Image 1 (cartoon, rainbow, N blue to C red):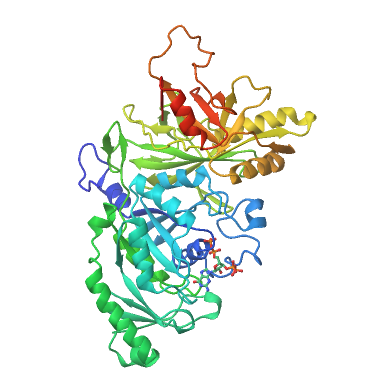
Image 2: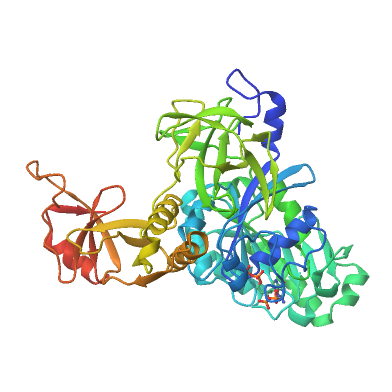
Length: 540
Ligand code: G4P
């Protein structure tokens, strides 16, 4: 990041503001402890006074970051929230990602708006399916990853084995910042390798308050006394081994995506959380720029720019308003400023930007690169739109993901047809699913595609609760989509006619929502059949 103020740069005070921002997301396989860790971080950030009160999904009404009834019912996080808090000298923006077994594009999109990610791993399980998917998205986007190995108070896999797995599967060099002293009932704390200190662990009642810490060197009598002799020996020999086996922590390598800092702890017991937070804020990058036509736009550039990564309608059912979430890439936001939506070319006044905190809201007057703006109102933005005061800047941050499941969501109540249409239109604008028009289909509505079936459930639940439209779901016979281009476009073909494709049995031809022709297949085994039969086409 550029730190010096120049003609093209924001004033020095804004440079300082930008450089103290840390914008990140916590990602994990469900149940690894993302919610618990989020709440403990908020506790340290002073955003909530008592953690533990919000972790128990079974007993509690909601967590600070929940909005939707569906989340409460199921204990899954469907919507993403942005939480901002101050910690030491940093202004922290924590973006909440949905964490269900199922996957949604929402998660991918949130990851386009962060500069780093904390990946929570269950020490008893190691890398799980979802961890890997999320990791892949982060890596493709060049997002540096910090790993929190959680639940050390439970019997865990040997820490060396966990390190080995992380290195082999993720192909990143692990750099343990701390090292656990035992696990399960014998978990006694961690050795901070940076500071050369042991943090002894004392359990608090359900992790409700900040965990007290006793700090000492590894040779200290208190440390020796609190560890059984065999455990002490294991730990000291492990520490020697990792000194030889792992590279020293190198922030340049972390940012380049070659190394990942590793922290051990127990979110529920509040252990290792504060150390992780402090180290993370120290190491994590300040806001990073985004590319515009191959050129990096620095966050300190004077011109305001940002992109829409999430739209959430009906946050307040009484007002039918929408929240549009914008990651500010460069410059300073000021209330009522005018920008151009690059997609439509229209000028828009950014009034009513709010700071959201669960159900709470506060008007926002100023925000800086790295922050997330939540604009409330009837803005006509779409996901991926660039909003800027510089006409030369357009970001292309929002990739479309290949759907892995398809469905028709059909209106069950003829009297609700208007509401069904407007609900569908609105929710499709939010990007809840992708629409496909199947060529020659008798269905009056588009087929929907999603990366996970949860997206359909969310869509149906929202049509029901926000638009009062009961629906039913029908599953079409396709599960794979293939985009293609003709090697030699047929210039005589009419726009509305599909290109010539030799379809395997059960296949159909359709258009995606950007009007591209696609082939729908009944199974992935048909992909090679399709390719073999159509050498005049290039498949993407
Ligand atoms: P998620 O958001 O990644 O899905 O995970 P979440 O934080 O909800 O944690 C999943 C379960 O793991 C919760 O238990 C939570 O209390 C527990 N947990 C989180 N961190 C730790 C830890 O450090 N040690 C231990 N032993 N457990 C931990 P639950 O039974 O599903 O819910 P609850 O009733 O306890 O809230």
